[in-house]
Image (cartoon, rainbow, N blue to C red; front, side):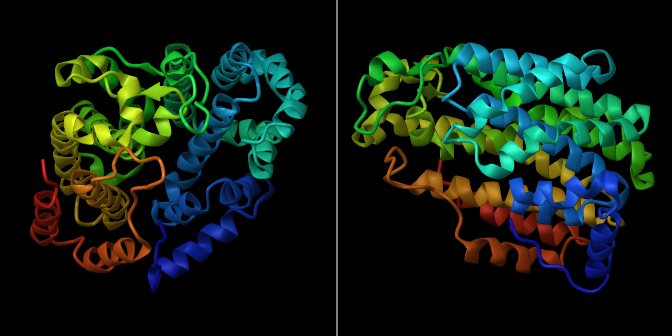
Length: 376
């Protein structure tokens, strides 16, 4: 996602760059930009008093993700390194040896095709990340460590639930390599570990710092934040079906596939889409239900917090556009096709909504317009 900044926004964005030139935050300006250029730009609209905390949580989550996804390192070792990373994040003072163990494995990551130079640099700079994390208030440290613990637990669960590796081009040994989640409850738990917990983290962090949210019922809104995050992750699940299948992972539960006469390996054949369509539609409706709650969450943000509204509204609107493409694609299961928004669509949504964030009625009307385009 690319963000256009004008006027006061440009001034604050320049202020962000100046602030992050301090030695203890340089990594938020250079390292974060190198591992995720789009997130780096998105971070510019987050209020300045929570920007570093959000950026640090992202960096450490990205480090964990790099460990989890480096397939050239044996699965038991990846699981161990994730455990050690979690131990260090939770209590760095007494688990220095855990960090040393991870960093001693850097040569293995350097030889792994999946780990690019910026991701390896991130792993080598975990000491600096830990120092910045320690500079936050005790309350901020606690919520950051909490969400990272959940995210890492989810990555470990994925590595355990899906023991197979990526399926070769052409689908060789697909039936032996491909594993599916069993139940809808398993899928729901996965979406919590991957994104629902981030919605809760976001809510608690913002409520602790933004005076305009002082009247929020934190517990109730945190649960709405969970729904928000799950909606985004259900969107990812539907969009990424072919890619995930070829990583040996079927997030579509067998509980939903079997009534449609399908097995996980059957989804490797794009021609199975007609049989899969009822399952797709069921998941589309579930994603929309979660996003509806995310929209109510967004509209509950006071008008004075336009940056927070922006940070929440755009991901939901982008998700709706993605779901619309998923709902009408006749090549949803084709690995040669990537379902994603065009840059023009991204810019159009940003242009249409950037000036209406203070008007909830107008913005909600646009949300309804995009929602109706999802055919399910």
